[in-house]
Image (cartoon, rainbow over all chains, first blue to last red; front, top):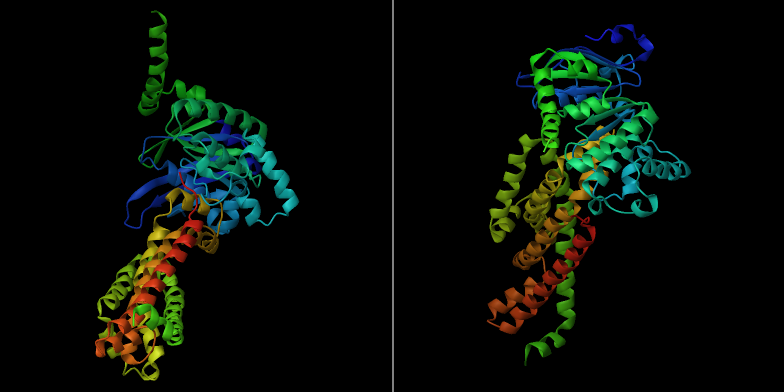
Length: 265
Length: 212
């Protein structure tokens, strides 16, 4: 385990899994006694194969699911003591398929949470410009369009703008770039990295992309079959002895090797 | 005397019967929407109720209309007035397409849209009114359209129990072996069905959100 996490003060501790487990009503265990902390401003990647329980862990944070064992704490309060609606509006949420409302314009989609929170109109008007600017979409060109008029990459930009709309301190991302073609994905990952440095949000990101984890995460939590098998900094992960971590790294390096092999020709 | 002359001579009666027909169908459709849409929503929320609700509506649909009027005749409050009885019977016929289209419309909404709505902190009511019903609206309207056309046809049988409507002409024409009388009921009924179909399909198209 990473020594850094032991030194953080209670104040910096934003998300904490305490022996958190989740099993389906039929008794099948999805996540087993997860212990994990996320401190202010860091980006944690939940990495692992399909079915490892990554998405379940993420959903426990914004109360889309409640733990069946242990507890998950957000800002030092168990999620079950939070009002689920208030908690979700306090946390930005980005998913792979974006889920923009097809009957809303881009502006309306971005302003969903501010509108639910009944912000005054003057404030939402300046906010939507700021947000579209933040994700590099031209306000005049896109604000009045509908989601079906946008490309996949543009839609995910809107998804990120929507998640950031009410300036939540926490951002949850479930394979945010997973459905995009490699070039668009690379662009968005690079831009998101800049955004992350600028905004300083606490981010938990589900991914099965090692490159993405290494690029964006300050720590990588490796999950397998509903269990946490290790937490690594990107540097530690690259040198990890754990067989799964090593397999991930070897797979990742394969591309670099292919590149080098072809450079000699 | 051809059919046009006949209609011209009896235009007041035909108009009267048409209005009665519209009243019977209009009231039934209002009731059917008021009952069917909430039932359709319940089906999506409580899947275990799907079988009894859809099954019940299905059974109502299979009862021959004349028999249904007969069954309802001895029911205390209903049997007192023919139009009351007919409106209830027509409502029962209209329910199935409305319930089915409401639940299908809601269930066919992209799962990511619903997940995002929940994850963004919309309440169940907000999701229902601002997302689900709005996106399901074209499908629900398609159900209302089918039900309306169906009901306009069945309502001609209302004359058999004395509820009036365009069926009056048809029944009288049948009794008197007079084709012009039959047509004086059948043509306006068909025109009414086509008109309702046209108006509702326009509305349906307007409400369909643009898709890829």
